[in-house]
Length: 132
Image 1 (tube, rainbow, N blue to C red):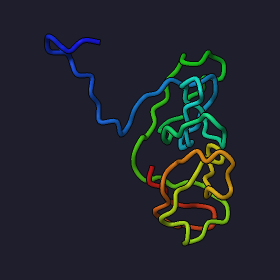
Image 2 (image 1 turned 90 degrees about the horizontal axis):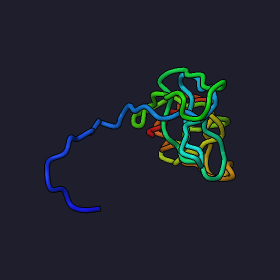
Image 3 (image 1 turned 180 degrees about the vertical axis):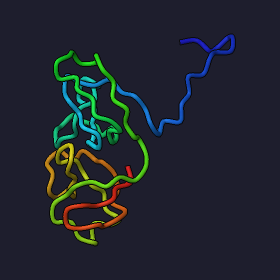
Image 4 (image 1 turned 45 degrees about the vertical axis):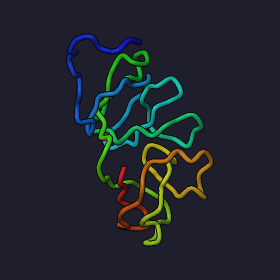
């Protein structure tokens, strides 16, 4: 690819809130979202080849469509409340990993370690605050 020889339009955005192509699935508002191996958004899971994308701002149903037919808006940055099992105050400061589209866990309890972010707050044994 050659260097620019003229100005180009910049399609820049902040990147905090973005639209991403959705796999043929239904995502609920507040879901943890990952990109699958094909690059489409889906509910997070402890699956090899996935990469955490963000947290869904809305519910979008593409289960009757083809991958990419619909888009979902996701938060790419910030702090979100996430479900967990048996959290303690000692989780604060540790990285957390996807279990499913609702739950996170410490690396020792997941298989594929799909990193979601860092635990920055302990709410209860079933809820933590995560900086994504």
